[in-house]
Length: 233
Image (cartoon, rainbow, N blue to C red; front, side, top):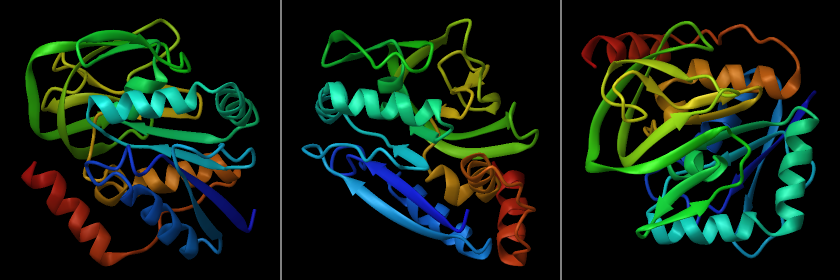
């Protein structure tokens, strides 16, 4: 694959915490692998494109989260996303986006049905979780860092596995795990944005999306930053 289509879903709604930067990081790193990446912003009123390689969802407050869910539940959009996943497309869903991908979550004091693509359920906790988080990724086998800012407590069902084991922070609300993974679907509470703080994950998503294995890009500044990041958090 020499071209990559990155679909950023509802950035006007799910871009509250800077997660829109994940698309830019993917495009930047794809360039070093000889891949031309194009970012497509899909607004609330647009239909999802059927030929995306990577679909991205970010964080939001309750009202914006519900508006995004409403748009994604339109039959064409949900079918498009499900068919894209079936053919091997990658999904990275952060915070509110992670909850949307699950079976249910709470917003504005009401429990709502999610997309049901990830086998997780989310409920509000007693206080907001804010601060740095460090995990050991169950998928990558090394540490990831991010910043969490949420009230959700997420429980994984039998068909989802945790994305990371918490070393510092709270993650899904149990101080044990963060996020969930099922096939090429990745959910996490990590902002940062996560791919800017963890370029290794960006390369994994590129590998999954293209079917080609990419060696880590030799980038002394990124390597130095990654080492510093893991030391201080």
